[in-house]
Image (cartoon, rainbow, N blue to C red):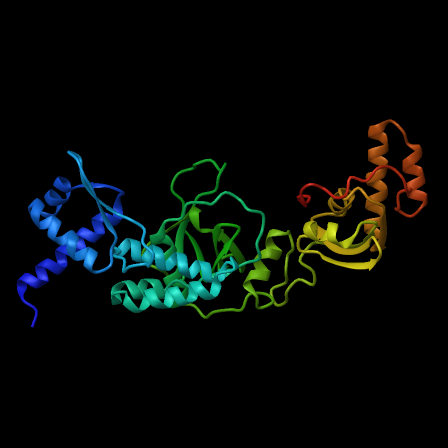
Length: 367
């Protein structure tokens, strides 16, 4: 049966291990002071850690001390409550963000969850995350972990959330009544967190950035969950960011408001890296069919023109008209309207010729 001294020694070893994990080097005197023991006791405890497989290195001299080195095998680690929750949240996020480590992250999350105390396991289990289609990589916004966990708990409990919302550039007009939303999904997209929910006062689906939300307590009443338009929260959010306005009971037919199809005089291998969410296929030697979209027809024409190659517009007519308008504006900018007239007469396909430096060095930002 374990004695009180054995329990004290075990607790002290765990404390020592925790300290060694926090910083690179620890003078022996500081360790002894933090643990409330003598230098000799610290030396004995370090030897015990070495026997357990922890590679603790000793440095000599007046400032000598101890350092936990990297070893050939990963020894058991010690985390405090905040570190354990942060680790579990990071692993759960890695499972859904398409980083290529989903299976390993899921196994690691299962391992961590099994050893978490029940009070921490409940907080981690409350976090349900969906991953939307990857968008442009914006700056990662700092999100309060407590806010993230509170919103996730509300999603699981199906409780309405009352919150304040900070809108950049909006003047401060004093206290305002809290906003209300029935949170259905907690989503991460392009390194930012969002709540997708039903706004009962507006009678429509709304999307809120979590880093701008300050929940109020207590939560509101429970609600009956709805299904997001189309049934796929990732596709729904991606469509919203592209400017689409999906109906309340159906997913948008196409994720972009304006979608067209062209044949580019460029090999598929040079188009594919810049196709984004478009569909590219080879239609012949050195020719590629590309179906893609943008916010507007003019933006789509400009984006396709960046390939600096001959373009055959398959459809629709709106895209052909947009190319004609783009050519006319470009010709006016160059001080020559003759070329624009030729392009319009040929149905939107520019005359062959000119140099072609392959493809754009980066995909066009369709805005």
